[in-house]
Image (tube, rainbow, N blue to C red):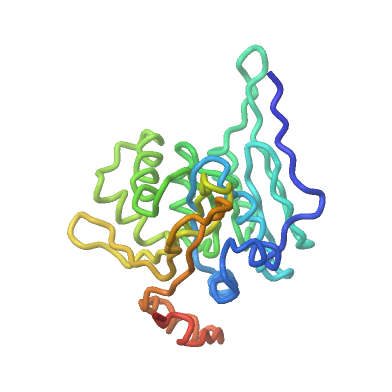
Length: 264
């Protein structure tokens, strides 16, 4: 069996995804501000939901002056910035030797003076190294993870960190996640028409007892399916103003407060 995973020669842009109704212009403005402010973002979604495409689009907001290191199983990202170092994992040879894992690559990037670290997908023990990188001054990191909701994303991150074999207590893992990750963007594929949309944008707000707390900033509310099997619904702000808005202002990034106002 041969599987061909083919990407367009001309990558999709922010305008394309807005036109396809994947998210709104206001949400794109918010994403741009988050990238410029160097927040750590995790894109969560199921298989085939468009996580890599969204990662490509978000990475287009990274300033061209920054040094970007990408780490992938197989090179799929299509970044246009001039200063990119691409690292790719390597499977073992027929004798079972010579493997270079994602985890090896994440550890090595920390010695390569990265302004941004982009991990194509966290699916193993490298999640721990990624969190530690986010917690030790490598702000503005981006990655994707397989999960069906932001809350599931946190549970999966916990599980992946445990796969690193460090035998850390659960509370320590959750504290690492809460302090490292700023935003989770949930993307979903609707079975009715095959459309892909950002269904939730959530901010990690900290810890409450043993639990990581989060708050939705934007949500897609589905109202039904049309006679042509088109998904109907609208993107809505929840009315919650992110905690990092003041930090954005200090960096000279001013988001209009109307962006977060609950309408209707």
